[in-house]
Image (cartoon, rainbow, N blue to C red; front, side, top):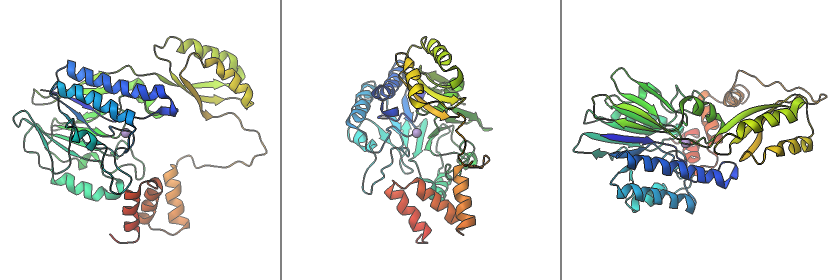
Length: 377
Ligand SMILES: [Mn+2]
């Protein structure tokens, strides 16, 4: 009994508006589907953010359908939950997943629906992403789950406190995971991570199969990207990493003092890559004129897909007043401190306001938060 766990595929994402990056994302998804067919897996489980947005482009929908049809022809079910990116941000809209359920290409789980694989041997549970504002309700749902077989799986797309320890970024802690499941298939966090609990069960973050943001580069270099293959034939699940070769991305430092030489060095390094990489440049040294810098950097054009100044750490010209930014605080913490100390909000109110700021484009979630703020709930 083999199951493939994939997550955070973000179909339709076009990093830096590059069509090549949109195609890369389709390519990684399609590679995983092909591997699943080749390995004769019994099912694919997908732990959320199938699409990059809740109203995906025609291209993203076509790519999803094309790949899922291949799976269906091989009789491999695709069992999924929606992530935060898949969640509608307009009242009355449905998850993009429902396009695929209408075509009978996937199964979507919620806390009332489970999916049973092969004569009751594996029962799969899943809960669509729940926003931070409703985390108490989520905990209640989690504690009500009572798996019926001893080989059950739980799919979740949530921020876990131990992995995302920032205000309003997490909804649950590892200990909130209900007992009795053999495999906890987590989505949302884009870097791979897994632990085996004392009872032999496994908590696993599959991560995104491509590098969606520069923060994921380190994790890719350390842990790789792709999917997990879980062997359920023994008492305890065995996990194997499926690694994909994704388009490389690098964070590079260029000192303006040796501009030409450093660019030449980078050029020689990236020449060897199979796929033209993306470069995230940290600029150091003395300040430099923009036109001069751009001309020098344009030497890279033939060797990389894209480059950008990620951080400008050049010494800025004086006579600007120095602004001190607290180094030990996150932006969230600075906003919270301001709301509590200077505006007199309570801790709970301040956290709700912070969440409101983060969800300003999300009609449904912001309505929920406002209701709580004014005490309607
Ligand atoms: Mn995601």
